[in-house]
Image (cartoon, rainbow, N blue to C red; front, side):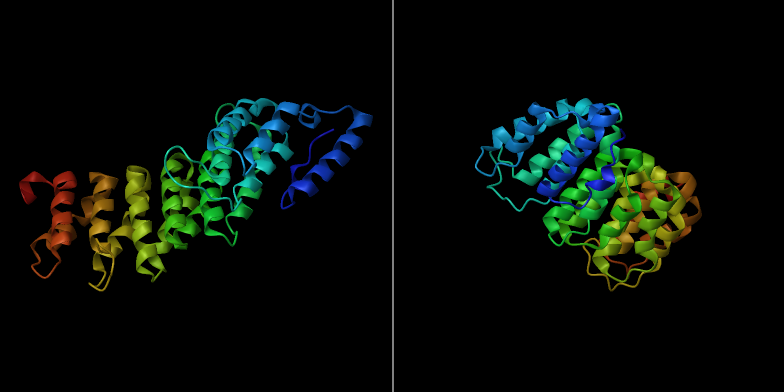
Length: 295
């Protein structure tokens, strides 16, 4: 009997356990599949992962143990890990300390590491839903977990979180760069959208940083980035958007930046530009400029 992961999405652990029992009972007539067979070791590891009284080393060990059993993981097991990404448990940072949600992130990453596991792929909808959680810590964990899903990741949803709070938008940027091989046109357009229609300085800045981090794989967005060279000097970012745009254009490489070399050179010789903008123009020309023209 096929396992229906949708029956568990959005439910509490108690509800998922009840749904799992119902599934196993229904599977008796047709023969339980591998994903329907209870795994005592997995249950023990999941319990240790969520134990607030446990030492961080215990949670870390449990997370790695869960990952090592990826081939036997059930959809319910994976979704219980996803649920713990939103666990409010906190602990002192440093010295190897690990909160439950951080341990859950490690477990999820380990589950997704290696040969494609259908039940992990099926969890994408649950991770996407968690990115809308009220707690920014939960949203950060969800977006970082999305990075482990590779080609199955919802890159458009991740790009939208560039508009979130600081830690979340930073995580979104890191994840998009990690997913550079899976962004496609829709993912890149979703990032560039934050440049074309977003008036928040910080959002524009994170979009530019992300595109720069993507390098040549985001070269098709050069036009949207170059438009930021026309930004007025009202940005409160440090460095301002012009400097970030110059860095991104240089990261795209010479073929894509060639059409914008005159604009870059103009910024360099304009004494009204901020020093950091002129410095960024020098660095950009050093990377993609033509020595016979810009030396």
